[in-house]
Length: 428
Image 1 (cartoon, rainbow, N blue to C red):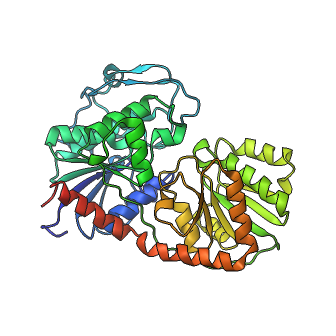
Image 2: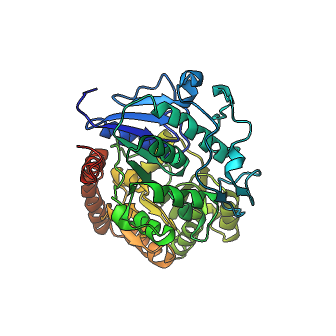
């Protein structure tokens, strides 16, 4: 890489092809775009040596010789205590941490001499997640002592402890990219250890990069952090080849894509479907995804006698998802709290008009979409009925959103990040 480019040490939790969700894809696409303007090293718990990353230097803890790291130690005390409150909705709680004070001592037992094989990274989000997060922070900090960089750029709460440790040992500026918050996932009342970690991490950062103004407002409102140290960086998107598939049925199709959790509003989608079907029974609703609400949605659709028009696919890979996009007439995203919402951008690329919650980041950039407050299911239903019954109106909405796509690119996001680095004097 060019010697005169700024050097950025990125900290991620997942990266293709080893991904669990959208965070890994976003980290890949963003770092790839930034590599045109900076020398990027991405450190993650687990990487594949066979995966080609272009100019990005990808470093996985699973591929490191930990014994060869000069400053590797697992005796660093936690800089603060974390207090957890049992919340059933929280996907990150484990039996060992729920309802306990998670103190510095919790992390200091039996840590000397940890070998790479003992760093349990087979399932990044399973088991004792917080222990993995702390172990990764020690490994990342040791690795950071062997390389030169100008900026630390961490992604979400899983890498915050690593970012804080590296900042403490190097004095380099710490940027935290906020893709998702605990208050999005579990609701504003959530005050468990993930929330505590997010709050401490964001307070420690020199700059925050929330993925939307909606997320920036949540950080300010629920974490008490000034917007003066935030630089909003909307997500970009990668253009996918779109096409029109052939339907095997005559009805119009309305699609929901996402995890079936509180945050994504699957219950709202069911309510919207029921209202639309009251006025127009010739519509099919498809819910693509899996999660805690799957069984409940299946039961409710049957109980409300719309099961013959409400289809649940379970998990779909990208190829099958694109086939579904190709036969969809309207895309609906009723999220209760959505930091961004990249699936709506993918739908727009397929020429699908979008009806999306105002409580989403994507509504700030996909201005051609029709919006509604997530609780206003009647308005969402009216939008859908207008789109499936008025072809002229539908074409206008599709054209407006399609124009927005020119401004939703990772190159634009990368350039904004570099300008933000400069404005804070992190780079020359």
